[in-house]
Length: 498
Image 1: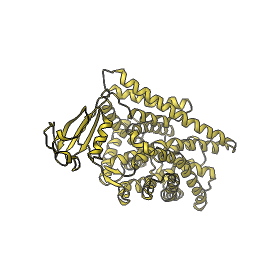
Image 2: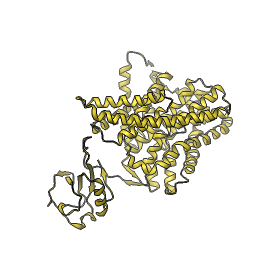
Image 3: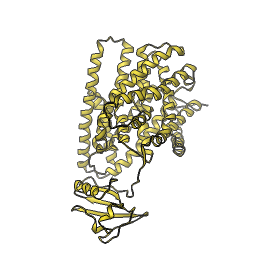
Image 4: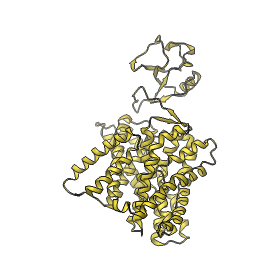
């Protein structure tokens, strides 16, 4: 029995889908599988047996809205201090890495297609490769941040920076190649395409920064009586940054990510409530996007022999050859990364909703064999999520790049107009060499230990309070730079900012 997606049961079916997806996500977390893979699976099951849904325009629209929110939240949660050391390699992976991946994968598809009984011109093979040439921000953000595991050599900010900023390059390659396939552009058109691409990146970055600054200025000064409206206001800035930048021929996705970076790295009124709202709202967008893509795919076409063979070949080649080769080439100038770190970056090149969304564009343009491309990308994405997504933590442990990440003992945040720095540290033996009481610690002026967490109990300390190993201290200071020096002098390396 199938239900029409436009029937009066829409709300009921939508509620059931969300409920089943959330339960599936809990099951996925327990067994170490990526929740997004289960969301995709739930959509496929419902689309196979109960719901008839094949709206290309609606799927593209849902994906566009969801991706804007996901990219903005990813940028907002990324601290610039963390990505500063990896901007060079991150940008290299997000630009040159995408082109290399598309070139390597396109060549492979072109060579292997005849062996599978598929006639595919080289440009069409490149188009397939371009749609899946970027790592998926939704998959990378959700998997890395759901694992309570630290990564050495600044690998986590590197991977998040790459996944958040490489979609514009893949998008541009996809649009450009669709134009070549559709209109048969000659080689003389490549120069204009390259110029247009550069303009898109520059305009996207500039207006993303400007709109992000405008959002910070507005939120900090508008003084709304109803604090819930701050979330609505920020949502308006997200969609405005995408649409307005796109109207000016810039890359809207890049603008959204840059705006998120700007907002997240400034003091903001009600920032705590905004962060909580967007965390939940982003998960909702991810669930809706993956459910929609699961509903959209035609299972009968997906399991056709030529699709299975091509999807399997593309998925395996991407994991084993294309991604590692592009990563090692891009990171060649950056000597500080060990071979194990490069291998891990190669492994965490997850594909997800973004490649599937980009694979819809050839269908909209009515490209010949577009459905074959879409189904091959969809299948290779499932392979990537199933193989790479389930082994993110295991591979880090295997390569010796993981460490146990300490959880914050204090769940606090300062108001946007408070300029003091709030940090959390753990008492160690080196710290106690100068004395065992709080008043014997060498701290800068205008610095106060607000609270101590000891074995799960919290109390406000006094100067004569005796410290113990393992105590967590919540410290507020107007002199953050001097405090950082004091921490280093006391042998404290693990400082958790709030």
